[in-house]
Amino acid sequence: MKLAITHTLLYDYSNDVRLEPHYLYLHPKQGPYLKVDQYSLQISPTPDFISKNVDSADNIQHIVFFNNSTRHLSIKAESIIEVTEFNPYSFIYHPFESSRLPIKYANDLNDSLQSYLNRKGVTTYVDQTARQIAASVNWDTSSFLSELNKFIHSFAYEIREEGDAYSPEKTLLERRGSCRDYSVLFMAMCRALGIASKFVSGYYFSDPNQPQYLHAWVNVYLPGGGWRGYDPTQNCLVSGRHIPLATSAMPNLISPIHGTFRGSAQSVFKAEVSVRKIEE
Image (cartoon, rainbow, N blue to C red; front, top):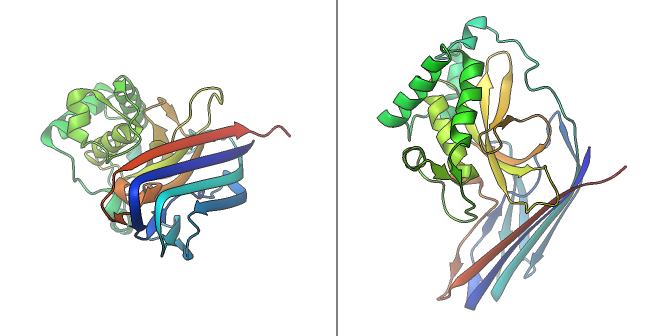
């Protein structure tokens, strides 16, 4: 399936400002089921320099440098990609003991996954709730992940385009949040039971006639299955309709745009996302 993606970000400032370097994560992340055919980046005011890098988590990162003052910042990222749908259940746990919780990774693998096992945000309440869900499915790993998806999906969903994700406990206590809040809670509850997990920022292709936004979900590392995606917002497994931009153990590191400005001004932010299928 071929998709055309347009992501526009607009900032208007009440006075002239000088833009500090801005970090962008707007390039689709290639993988076995995703190929990038075209990509373009349009920025106004015209940057003095753009550095294209691969960051510490193998994401494509652009760092944009500006010299002159401005009252606006406009960024448009356009891409054409090809995605292949796949069966997310097509794997066998190996070693088979990993099909039961808590997961214990082999020593070398455990060392390599440490940043994805960090228990920051795993409070007593988060840990106990995770264990209650696991016990309800007899500590079966796949069943726990599916039940966790369903549990968080039942919360009150809200659209919040700016700001950091809520803490896992806040989302759990209030039973509400955005897709990134759901994902951060999902990660914490997985890590409570020894499942390595990372945050994914990207897009989800569903009904092109509905409003579209930046999306977030979670990848978990399953022995024998590698990284597998779970989306508590949609209550589904990732199977070819999710388009990742970046992944990280720490969600705040991969915001689609991150930067500051110098000057005394108020800013107004607007974002638009379009993902549409190209008929072949």
